[in-house]
Image (cartoon, rainbow, N blue to C red; front, top):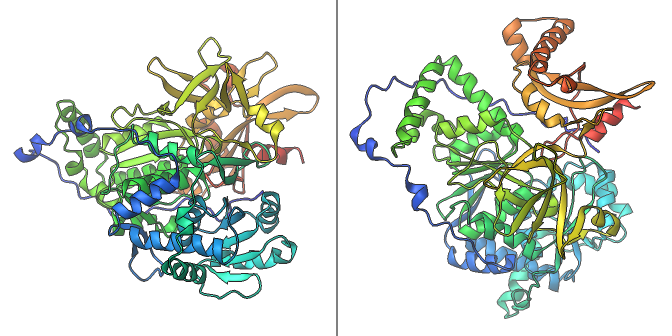
Amino acid sequence: MRILKDFKVPNFKFPKLKMEEITQIEEEHMHESNDKKKNIKYEEKHYKTIKEIFNESTIKNKAKTFILEKFDHKAPFTEITYDQFRQDVIGLGTGLNKILGLQNKRVIIIGENTYHWYVSYMAMLCGTGIAVPVDKELPANEIENVIKRSKASAIIYSKKKKEIIKKIKANLTSIEYFIEMNSDQTIEEKDVGVNYIIEQGKRIVKSGDNSYMDIKIDPEEFKVLIFTSGTTSQAKGVMINNRNLAQNVNVISAYVYLDHNDRFFSVLPLHHTYESSIGFLLPMTNGSSIVVCEGLKHIVPNLKETHPTAILAVPLLVENLYKKINENIKKSKKDKLVKSMIHVTNALKGVNIDIKKKIFKEIYENLGGNLRIIVSAAAPIDAKVGKWLEDIGITFLQGYGLTETAPIAALTPECDPRVGSAGKAVTCAELKIHNSNEKGEGEVFIKSDTLMIGYYEDEEATNEVIHEINGERWFNSGDVGYLDEDGYLYITGRSKNVIVTQNGKNIYPEEIELLLGKIEEIKECMVYGKGQEGSKELVISVKVIPDYEKIEEKYGNITEDEIRKIIWDEIKKVNKKLTSYKAIKNLEIKKDDFEKTTTMKIKRFVEIQKDNK
């Protein structure tokens, strides 16, 4: 387990807005219509394997830019074409198979988001063996454990992970090769550089050996092993096949229009299925380009330099972006004007005149100028954030799924996003609510072509979550929610996080946390049931990390006791909005960071265990 001490939500800095009062709207813009979405043809694709997608897209989009990355912070972004990517993937795949003898073996991929991560993953999917993407933030002992559990034969790692690999190297006797990204090293015992393997592989291909690209991929074959983040229990190995991954790409095209003009901004870790599937495989399918963000603190300058059209994010990132933009609007004394313009532009949009991008041009410029879609997933988000983004003209979509569904099971359609919903079942999936209560809430069950093969070497755990109903495999997501009359899913909690009172009432922490998240003085919080000696009843409690920067701005330099009182008074106001049994009875001010997964979800079971030590 790890504490994300290194993760700091970036302090986005934006220049003051200069928005002028708009007294008239130029006639040419009065004809701009929001009817475009109605005229878009959303067509589901029908790929069976990722190799099929790779082969088609890299030939069709040969001369187009695919990856943009800064290999030197002081230099501009390097643009890598689809053709170079194709040649490097085929070169690496050929080299791994022919030179290192790794065909049909398991290979760990670990490192920050970088070009060789994309190349390595694709080389595995197109014919080398089984890819095992690993969280780069894991401590050495956990990395060693995952390597051993996966029975990997090789490790492809970035330069930043070199020291950790050195530390555990002696214990990894089953590893045949340690392959370093962005290295030209020739083979020296077990060490070799990726660049060397690529170049040697290209020579083999040039000699007329096309054996790598001749490999036929079985859509049902186990090709990716992903260890879950373990927010509620020990990480499990999820077995994914090509069909699971290809279906993500196929069905999203039925809900969202993307093409070669789109540019994705990659800020989430690639070892997670959300980013590797939707942030990598999807744009590749559409001939889009991908910007590799330099890191959280570089988000704003990277956006301005590369002008992306789409961002995949987690709620924490979207909410902070929303917060900082609105703070800047207030400091610029333009908050009333922005509210007024939202009202005006919404009214105009209602009669098919969409001028939001012109009116809110300055906000767009701070986000690169071309942003049109933000997709949030991994956890619930305050609906007002999504509504505000829609109000300024950015399409806000929410996706829903788990590593076990590779990951997309539901998505809000671009033509009818419905802020607050987790989306409708994608076209290859079906959702149903199991054991629903009088409100229609119950466990979310998923039937989908994206559903995993099962948990790696853990049949018992697989049988706990996958149930055969009328001859079909249904997955118990562990989430609690309901479906509206149009089939839109609303998540209200997670069954494993549920607090059950002595009189049988169920309390879902996420519901209360969304309300607490609106309190300016609270940076982060976690609601849970706290055990008490001599009683079986749980006390509804909250751990809070105060927003010290906001508190100092509002109240000056005050004591910890005063901070506690201010926050408690705000919590009491929230309690008035809750039924009595959900009211928070106990407040704990937390001094250190919450322990989190790489998708920024709090590891609740770890935080609760700290109380029991």
